[in-house]
Image 1 (cartoon, rainbow, N blue to C red):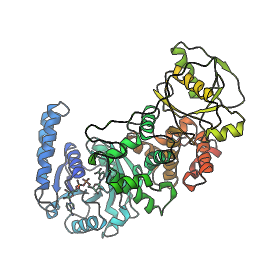
Image 2: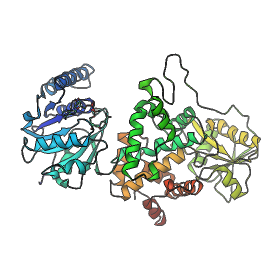
Image 3: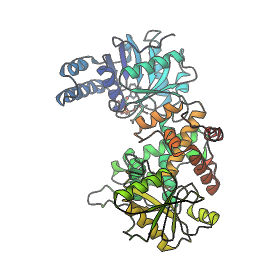
Amino acid sequence: MSVSAALNPSAVVAVVGSGAMGAGIAQVAAAAGHVVKLVDNRPGAAAQAVAAIRAQFARLADKGRMDADAARTAGERLIAAEAVAELADAALVIEAIVEDLGAKQGLFRSLEDIVAADCLFGTNTSSISVTAIGSALQRPERLAGLHFFNPAPLMALVEIVSGLATDAAVAETLFATAAAWGKTPVHARSTPGFIVNRVARPYYAEALRILGEGGADCATLDALLRDAGGFRMGPFELMDMIGHDVNFAVTRSVWSAFYNDPRFTPSLIQQELVDAGFLGRKTGRGFYDYRDGAERPQPKEAVAQTLAGAITLYGESPAALALADRLHERGVGYTWGAAGDERIAAVGEAVVFVTDGRTATRRAAETGIANLVLIDLALDYHSAPRIAVGAAVNCWAPAVGAAIGLLQAAGFAVSRLGDVPGLAVMRTVAMLANEAADAVNQGVCDAAGADAAMRLGVNYPRGPLAWADLVGLPAICTVLANLAQFYGEDRYRVSPLIQQRVLAGRKIHD
Ligand code: NAI
């Protein structure tokens, strides 16, 4: 096959499975100008979906988000077909049926006897190997993953997933077609979790680890990942929204598909929620209680401290420069000092550093600075409303208070964590970048694809690899190496790509 331009809008697209995803995909294809045939094996389901999509087009027109004529004609291009036998004229069939290998293989096998030889096949599977689905086909080269995100009309990302037998030209045609439909496609190789469902695992896993080790409660960690990390939702509220059954199943499937790689080890805490039937919002309980009258716990926040004395700032790190600006804006005085280490501030008895993945206690022991206080990473230290701190076990209480007072004087709400290595945002971002780097290193996708996938598939505020470059790849590498040393677990091993880039003095995006 030698096709690489987008499908012509005059080509017929078929969507099999008219549930949440199939209907959304059909809406996208019809809006892009295709005649779309929708089929479902539940009697009446396809017709119902067509009616719902037409109503959706009408709503969009009412709100002025779609031209009224375009909405009407797009609706008219939707056809509810009774059976796959009616799909003979399709140039592309997209499958969005039940997530079951046998069912998907059976469907594509029967389609091979119905459609033309040059008809392309796309599967919307989120967890099944495209290679395995293709293995049942006479011509597996025409099949690729076409992985939309929920809700398909709104989410920009489409992972174009190539199995071992997928023809590169087929992947290119689907890539160009998704782009023509207004989406942002990203190429991926068929490996467990593809890009998004793999790289996102640490977002949940690290928060669960910190919770499990008593480093902080859910509400505090959620607030930190939102307010300091810039993520749209904290990990616990997000898991509650996704549903623990679904989220836990994805983690388990990626973990077992990678032969129990400790990177992906599922959490006993989440297992217990699943066992209890506390599946999140949909059952009224998860990490939070959604039942009537239940009170939402608030993030822990340090009480207001008075400034303990003169403030000295050090160095040119983003944290130090932002502290200076924030203090200046609030009329708080400071002076600049010189130091032979990476401290960013000193006030009263406290010396403040940005976490490098060591616990404060270990860093205090290694530096001989007893009153050592660590601050977390922020997406933007200038605008972050909240920041986490951790202090060494032997840190004098008034010194912790002095550091908190300094951060409060700079306008931060301060949440004190236990002395966990890497605190919350730094640890999470380092592990997201590590996973993305491994995906790149293993040829699953390129660095731009990994970052785009995480920004557009799960709304991350910045691609994890671009973020690592910005923090400084050597700093991220150090955080990971310190986590690995602290826990002694293979889970925190540093990606070969990060090691190599640091040794070469290069960024990931060079
Ligand atoms: P769904 O359960 O809402 O819809 C599936 C539809 O397929 C149902 O209407 C069902 O009657 C129909 N169906 C099942 N077997 C069939 C067959 N053999 N022939 C014709 N129709 C059949 O499921 P949903 O959520 O739309 O998922 C569909 C696919 O998309 C799955 O592979 C899922 O893993 C994947 N996916 C789901 C996402 C999500 O967030 N729900 C996101 C991305 C992918």
